Image (tube, helix red, strand yellow):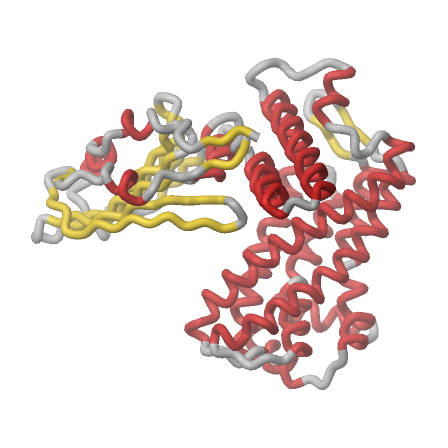
Length: 424
């Protein structure tokens, strides 16, 4: 594919995906042709941008100035990153192909490669913003590219893999989850390859925490201190993982992997979430004047990460219906703590029909949304940086939803914040 055709294809898949996917699906193509004519060129965009921004433009560190990465390390990382990116596209395509029958689709490796490659277009193009020395703008652009890429995948799967459109949601979700795992593994491999090459020159591979401690440390309670502590936990968990791999003990390897995931997620280790019978006990029989009509609880696990959730519905039989969700985020509590703690997540939005806002109250992260036209909304809080309690549905006012949440034994739930936590 020549340059003009490449640009035309990129524009078409981004601007008119509904009409472009049938064209793509019908095109005769080969793996080599798609790689040399599209994937290898487009996948190079974020690599080149990252190389230029890190070595020439530099990375702005608030209060510290601009930091520029050494050229030798940056080039090494770019080359290895580029090769793994190319491999990642093909691995994800294999996943899409393998999942096809599960979601009523037809296995076709070439079509799978097409849908993955062209779905990545949004992320590849969005990475161009990274050349601008604005961290916030770069993050927003990449998030937009990621979200639009997921949309492109959802739109393209029924056309290329012939699955029923109503099953594209599940097909897309499973693909994204498995792809994340793939790229985490690839990232680890990149680090393992780059460390021995660039490490002797730039100290790459030395624990961030130890490097910082050699030259001082961030103030207690600051974002820097939290990041520093996180890096030390991940470093310790990585050492355990290395030792387990050398031992050949599969049980030890599984436990070390779970510990590493827990540390990376910021939980400080593996967390066993509350069993279903325990978390369901926090859903009272009556809530905000409404009687409970249904109650269920479940605990799910993947890659050593457990999450428990209790769901209850309440009604007065007169049009007021609420749904209560109580979630124990388990090993994800570190990410919840990040959002509700030192990340300082807050936002407020008003519309003609209502409002939505997220804020801190009594050391808890609170989210509320209300629509005056439908008389519905939601009110939720994060308890002990681990548990989420959320009430939603039709109500007399936002106060009824707030009363519903307050009707849950939040103090008792918070007292269980350390339950099931296993230190690394």
